[in-house]
Length: 435
Image (cartoon, rainbow, N blue to C red; front, side, top):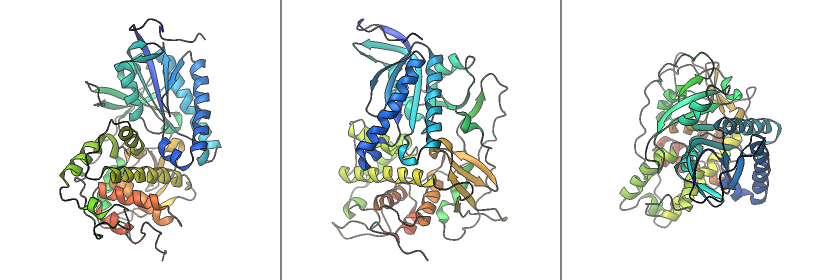
C-alpha cells in the first residue's frame, strides 16, 4: 500500500487529513519509578505502532514524548489502524506480566490542517490531541466527522458521548468512543438499590456512590446493525460538594500531617479561596477523570497555572495521586473472578457484597448481585472509587507511603472526611496492624 504523506515542501498549504494522536497512560509516574524500563516499553510499542501505521498507508510524522502523531489520507484506514493498535495491545496485556505492559489512548479527527516544513498544525491536529485525552486507557475516541465517514465502511461499535467542550477549541465537538470486542461482551449492570444503612467498617458518607455504579457514559450505536435499545436512565447522582482543606488532624505549624505529608500551613491557609477556586477549575477536566498524569504534564508545560498558596506542595500532592492511581490499577489486576476483592455494600434486602477484579483492557469488573459489569475508571464517581480504593488498601499487606498520601489527598480533594478518618490509623510511615 502506498504511504500517504502531507504535501511537504509547500509551506503554508492546507490539506484534508485524518489525524491520529496516541498517548501512553501513566507515563510520567512509571518514568519516576524506572526510567530505563519505561523507555524500553514505550519504544517497543512505538515500533509496533509504526509498523501498523505503515501497513494501513499512514505515516508517523513525529513523537510527542510518550505519544505519536500519525497522518492518513483516509479516515477509514486511520480508524482501522487505531483498532489494530488497541487490539494488539489488548492481546499483549493478556500474555505479559503487568509490569511489562503499557496502555495507550488514541484520538482521531478528520479536518483541515496546515503544512509547515516537516510538521502539520491547526485545529484538526489540536482536536485529535484533545480527543485522545477523552479516551480511556486502551480506548479510542473519534469525532463526529470521522464517525460519519467510517460508520458504513467498517464493522464497529461505538458509544456516543455527546458534544463536549474541549480545551482551547471554540465549539463543542461530538465524540464517539469505539468499543473493542473485549469491551462489548460484558453484561450490563443491574440498577443498584438505594443506600439504607452502613455495613461493617466501610464509610457511611460513601453510600451515595451506589447510584454511580449504574452509570455508563453514552448510548451504544451498532454500525451496520440494528440499534440497541437505549439503556434506562441512571438514577440521579448526588453532587459532590466543593473540596475543603481542613483535616480532622491539625499538626503544629511547620509540621507535616502523618496522613498527607502536606505542611499544616497549606492545609489551613489564611485565605483558602484561591486554592478552592483552583481545585474547582481543574476538577472537571482532570480530577473527575482521574487524569492526574495529564494534569502533571500540563502543569509542567505551563498550560495549567497553579493558583494555590503552596504550588510546590500542590504538585507533590498530584504526583501522589498519580502514584495512587497507578498502584490501584496494578493491584486490581491481581484479583480474579475466582478470587475477587470483597467490598461490603450498603443496603438491606440481603444484597450480596460487591466482588471486584481486573478485567480486559484496564477495565474494572464489578459484580453486583451476581451480575458482572465492566467499568472504566473515569466511569466511577469519586465516592465509589474511594470505596474501592480503601478496600484494596485495607486488603493489601503492605502499601507504599506515596499511595497512602495519594489516597488521603484524594479524600481531601473530594471532601470525603470519613475516608480520611479510615486512613489515619494507617499513617504515611506504615500501616496499622490488621486485627
